[in-house]
Length: 365
Image 1: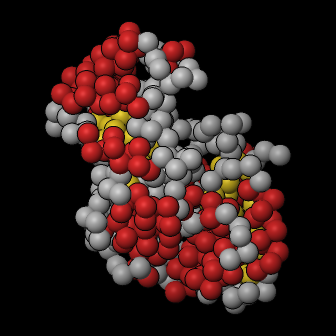
Image 2: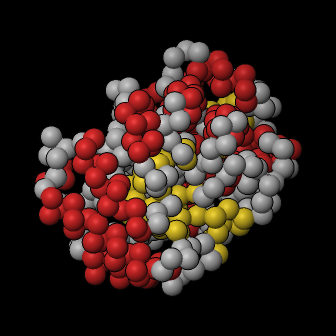
């Protein structure tokens, strides 16, 4: 079996035009093709195109060898992720096995998910967020995540210093959501690193009564802020979760400094399926659970499910709410979400096929 072509698809999914879904297809001379997904970063399509030309003629079953050859050329891991996932998809199809079976077998038959974006379309006020949260739990979901940096101008100042009234409003919104969903469901909040250090510490303390699953990205990790994150984590009684824009070497420092209680690598950013698997194994040596980040398309979701099924320290997977209405039509069958869990498919590869007829309806230049 040899690679004949690497194709990219720019899809107008949720978030377009700010970021498209970046689908990658690796084709072979035996008629088996695999699909993957990469993070939508500037230059990603050009990079994948160049990398794709360099692996034409190679054996797609040599996933690790091809990953090393590409990455050692200096290609950023978020660009490689889509190709790597597609290669695993091919390997699974060739062997007629789901990817999790090739990684050691399942630890679980279903993957718990939390709903991100349940608040989309709501005004930034307690009653609106509470109403939206009730709608989601009524669908059977047992965990939610909400943004608390919000649309208020004072929360996005260059100083990262919001008004006291905005901090108090944020706390009121969290309180309203907690009341609406009860104490038997999990609730996480995402701050997107929007606050300065004293403000985020103040906010964390004010949110302690609401029994949060975690507070996400209390400070931004770019620019070497791991030690600052470690300080915040040491002061917080609420678990701290971070890492959506880190690769495995960067997670090493985060774990060594105990800068996060939970990590959230993203399969489209970290370098693909094996890098996500290895990152989880590294975290397991520190007894740190893994809650993978997952904010893009359905291919990334199903690739993540394959890894989540087989890592012992899996905690929960992100799942996008209020997504595009045709999300499931772009696959040969809907993502199997039932009562807050994704059932792990037993089909080969990533477990789903792409409906190209539907895919072509949503491509953009």
